[in-house]
Length: 435
Image (cartoon, rainbow, N blue to C red; front, side):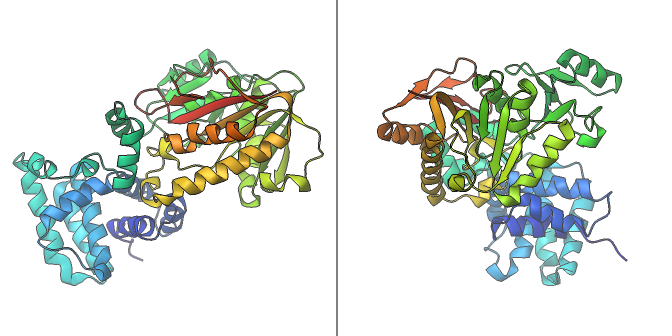
């Protein structure tokens, strides 16, 4: 059986995400089933890169064709995006990128467009070879130049006008692989030495005392002692959660939106005596249980939403609550480029309403003098300070507690970490004390 055309498979992934709003990871998982192991890295690169630079490439394509491609011929459009990405960003030989993209048309039953695709890609090659690409780029909109949709571009620009250029640039970079050292099993300096022996370069994170950055990402199965629980994958900004929680022996701790369980496990590694409960929706708890098992940690896992607390809570208040709420994900776009295409302007209002409701629910279960850490992986004040401000207006017994342990920009109520400004992803932290 002939191998599927890689460019066509990548074009299917882009279409499913951009036009149909599907998850990149799930779409890739489905499409990868048709490929052999040798083809999968290239598909991953085309899919992630094509989505990361989609708006930039689409802006170039608009200038390379005389009239827009019809809606019913969208696969031609996405094949051209894949071809342009290969020519601009990948090391694929030029002739191979053009020829394989054209072959993808035959497999998609769009053979009529062979001349169009061949002509557009070869025209783009001539433009690059003559160093005239800048002429096309100068005609792009400000949002297209940084490869962001108009909505995200304007929202981030409004929130961080002086830092937006750094945010956009960092969000378009391939993310490093960052690990969290399990202090119960090893020390950072020991693990760095082990990496060096395995000819893998690792460096210490700046703000987390437990972090190691692998500059050349690799499958976790290839990391030394991963299966034995010495390390876990966790971004540096996310690792700061544990210290911010101010944990002590034998405290009752609730992780209210726990999947995939990275922060649950990090807290237990920090203080194994914790009475820990992790809560999330039924379809999300498998990853929590999987992480706990690999690391040899114990926690009670509840397979239901936080809002359903009356069904599982024993009415004993929690000393600490971590609330890492669902959000736009604007701080982790470099890791999940499909976020650019799956979020709509109305989503911010919807997320903010859900975040406030979760915060009010968790507050009911917090002990007096207890601490609640509110966390998002968002850059946007609509999901961060604005939600905290609305909550404080309703709750006179809530007090903001300074977060000196979290490096970042001080906001009205919390701390904001920004990609390109700080190491790691974009995260927001706010610590509340119940009076």
